[in-house]
Length: 395
Image 1 (cartoon, rainbow, N blue to C red):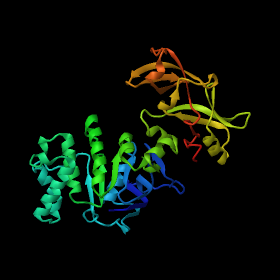
Image 2 (spheres, rainbow, N blue to C red; image 1 turned 180 degrees about the horizontal axis):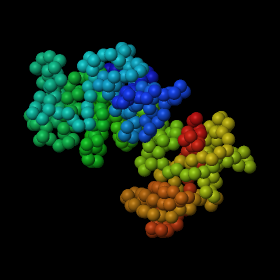
Image 3 (tube, rainbow, N blue to C red; image 1 turned 180 degrees about the vertical axis):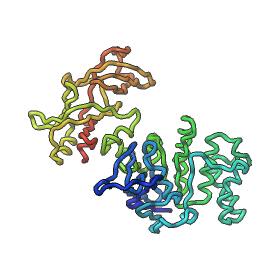
Image 4 (cartoon, rainbow, N blue to C red; image 1 turned 90 degrees about the horizontal axis):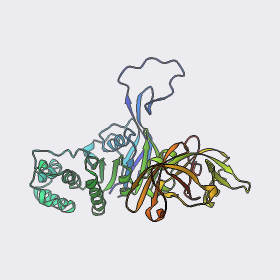
């Protein structure tokens, strides 16, 4: 239904106070609380470039204040674009009114009219467009059937649960059959069980309607389960765009590596070295681990030199078995039984770390608090980041 292209989009909020005249040469942007400050004001979104394919589900994800909701609101027309160009189906949209963009938006707080029934809430945007009554009824009942809220059509919002209200808000958006459906943290007000349920409902929904989706969340689990592609943002800038598997397996920098994955990736101070046989290896503490053949080639292609690095390994990729020369020692601080696995919080090399160990591997091992444990990681699961936090394999 819709292709969306954002080219060099920038959003700057003007300074609220008149700026003092600066000396020549002082115009360079600076940062305050991770926000870029220029002569024009606070840069909320900077040089944002993205092409969204027809019927694609794109998720913007990042910590609070990274600019993801501001980007969505610029697409909706609720925020002016300072610089750059927004196209929907090839048409420049910068100066087009929100009502003329054929977009529907679902907000975090549902935004339902309390004095109207569910049916009236869902019909309201169709009334504004002068859709005939019979057609309004047909669309509402069709959307209610898709979302499983037919039995609630005559109720008021106050008589519904949070999950039911969110379904109504989504229904009100899809009755318009929009080209583009924008969703701004729609599940953040729900409890964990309802969030899981609604995630599944949204996955089913996108199979039943023809809209293109742009979805904003700070929850990386939502991003990984919902998105065809994920746009990871930090401080108003895109860090990486890719499929869920790509950003998990090939994070371009340390921020992405730490943000994607739950529990988050462990990081250790280490060194990248070249062994006597001319192969790359990482040294963490006293352990030396040669990296996989694929990583050898990636590093050689970039003529990577030995250097101090940060070694990243996901908790589920750590093993309690390995060569003596590759083992690292730590002390157990906390042991969490999770059923099929145990999450061990350990202190090693002066920092906290998490290891996920299948219960089948634990026979005969002591996991009491304060006991010593030895672990290692495979040659193909190591991520290596330089002093600037860039992944050495992809920089």
